[in-house]
Image (cartoon, rainbow, N blue to C red; front, top):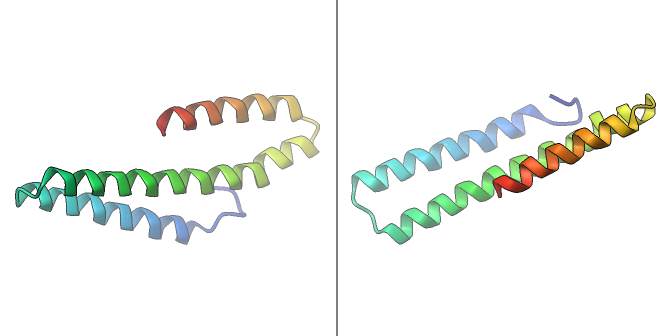
Length: 91
């Protein structure tokens, strides 16, 4: 993991997402309204997206920047482009 990223913050975010997923399971068990479950799913998607954005920012600040400084800009940009394309498809 890039050194500019605080793993404890990501772990905290992931733990919250895990709790939300467990909450959905509980909602299903209690036959909660579909709308409420969909709202929770939307919240989880947004939280995962935020984690992805944090990782992309760290990737830019660490991996891409380092590759450019090493003279590997073209490969770094190709890799970044593929990464962004994949990330965008998940949204």
